[in-house]
Each structure stands twice: as structure tokens, then as C-alpha cells.
Amino acid sequence: MHTDSPKTSGGYYKFLNIQYGEPPIGDLRITRSIPHQTKRSVINIGSLECVCPQSNPFWLAVGGRWLSHYENSTTFPFEQTSETLLTSKYSALVLPEPEDPRISEDCLYLDVMVPQKIFDGAPNPTRSKNSSGASLFVWIYGGGYTSGSKEGVGNPAGLIKVAGMANGEGVVYVAMNYRLGAFGGISGPSLSASQSLALQWVQENIHLFGSDPNRVTVMGDSAGAGSVVFQITAYGGTKDPYCSNNP
Image (cartoon, rainbow, N blue to C red; front, side):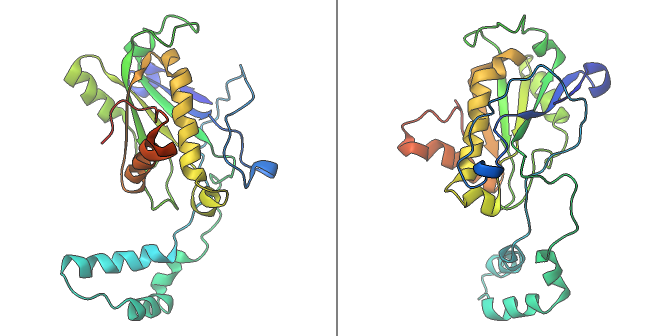
């Protein structure tokens, strides 16, 4: 985990790369994600971004062309478009890319960003989960369930600042990595399972940052928005999806 103080981050505490799930490697590579088991007191001051294995599938290239036909209400020449893309330089988008040092299968981490006044309001580590706290905003990134990362949306400082101006209280921000592509589906819906683990971590720990686990809003774009639906409908809707407000 890496931390930034309010002095260096503009009035916010940033807790980066908090591990919420066991590394999905070895015997856990093709199983459902499970909660992180090891309790540590040591803080790693490294801040290297962590990204789950991912790629740009061919359907992403085809989908971009399809949208233009859809918008113009014209027939989409699927076979012709596919053949053209496969024989053109555009196909380079779906070829293996140079190795990214950020990518690792050990990627089940989340970030927490909290205004100083909210964090300072959390009196001690024994703070009760039932204590009132600030609202929480959880972001799930999009990317067709095949790409993306918790850092991809950019710095949430502006959003947090506006939230503080709007309600005078402020908001705590959380974003998580989740398993993608084949790693997200090889053992069933592992991507939604890893998301559920992150949301479970929020319920169990976010009060320590000055937030209220009963005041959670979960949002996302594209595949992230679809993921919110998965969380709401999982287990037939009988299990609490860990969010009080949903788009």
C-alpha cells in the first residue's frame, strides 16, 4: 500500500493499492476470487500502478465501425468489415502489445481517497462500523470487461472537491481493479466475484477512513455500469449488493 498525505495531495489522504483479494495465481488461478487472508502492519511506500491482465479483442475494432452504421441507420457489412480489418494496419490493435510492467495477475487491489477533515474524524482503529460517517462513492471502470484499471478514470480530486462544496460534508472515493477477459470468466463470473470482494472489503473497513458503510453509492461507465447491474441481481437479488444507491 502507498499513502500520500494532505500536504502532497491537495488536502486529501490517498491510500493506493490496498489488497482486498488473495493473489489469483497458482492454485487460485482458475477459481473464484477469495478475500485477502494476510494481515499486515507494514506499509509499502512504492506507488507503482497495478493493472490486471488485459487486451483489445477483435470485436472492439468491429464495434467501432458498427456504431457509425447504427447512427446512420444503414446496414452493417459485417463480413466485409471483418476481412478489411484483418488485412489492414487496424488489425494491429488486436495483436499482442509490448509487455506492460504494470500488468500482473496479482492485481486485486483498490484505492481509497478521503478528504483530510473526514479522515481526521475517524477517531481510532476501533471505530464502530455503526458510527455515522461521510458518504462513499465507489467507481467501477468500463472497458468491455477486457481492459481498464482503477486509475484509468484519472484523478478524482475534482469530483471530491465538488462533492464537498455541494453538501458541505464531502465524500470518500474508492476504485478497484477486477479480473478481466478469460481470467474474469474462466471459473464462472470471476470479474463480478472480485468486484463483490471489493465491495465486501468496503463494508468491513471503510468506517476506519471516516466513511459510513450504509451510505454507499456504486457507479460505473459502460462495462462498469453493467457490473453494477450484476451486483444488484447476483444471488437472485437476495444478497445485499453492498450499495444503498444505484444508478
